[in-house]
Length: 371
Image 1 (cartoon, rainbow, N blue to C red):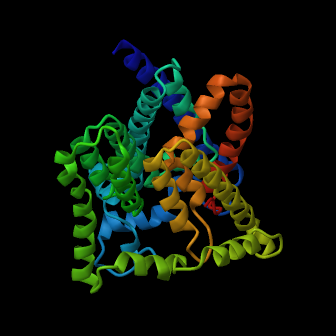
Image 2: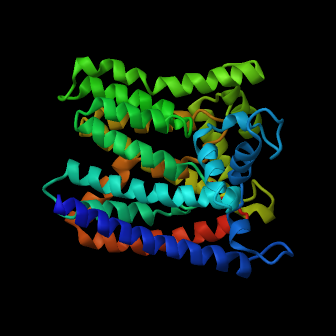
Image 3: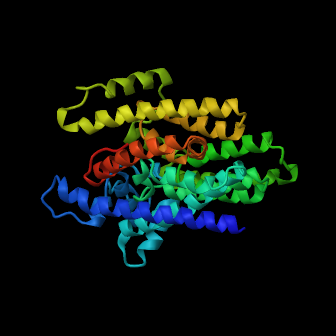
């Protein structure tokens, strides 16, 4: 127990250090690279891209048109609901979202460390290493910004730890909570089912619990059916606002490679070209990770990564997969194992990841597309 306490303390220490770094970037990057005429401030720096839509859901709900310029049915209600609740502290919707992500990233980091230590008990102090690698990920800005990644992981990581321990009711409750946050919850439900069927700790008396995560998904779909007339209004919103209509993977890959080619976009939007190249890197990393999980016969985790990759490679373009890598706990635990066995890889990782994380954060805070 003392080991877990020390692990959590070290993990939270790394969380605090990295949050301070992101805060410094939030107040310095807009000042140095400001595109507009207004003097930048912290809240405005965080108000970028999907944050506008989460803010609109928190403020108006789903039945007031498109106040943020996009169909809001695409966004699940869990994060905006907490964003709204946190705003009652007098810090506004964006401030509320920042607070939710801050708390959620701390919780998720602690449980990522516990999950890593559970999977590899023979490697002392592996947990905090996994959390540090996760906190310093190149796309780590999305663990601090008012986005859904941190909150989803705060539910998914303890949920998966519970599943690995054979505590299926607890796992189902956490996965149900994750399913209120983003559509990735559907893939997590699928992965939990695979984990249950392939686990040596399978308990058939717990099977009914696995139906629980379906409840919030169906409830949200029923609500959208009532106000928009379609059970799949969230998918239709994704297609309308983000070109996520079904596309064959090979065609999607061709579109992504074209978008990653210099000159495909106007010269003043070189950030788009850069990000599509990053998406291709993320896809490669995901496929390598999937192959490793299949080789290890980690069927539940392989199902999770495969479902995520499948969803992102059947849109017009492969995009936002860079952010989705934050949800792949096997990736960060696997990297921590490599670092534990070959410390020089840890130094190399930090030498590459930290500058990229700073660039990603600076790009986000100045309104450039960051995936």
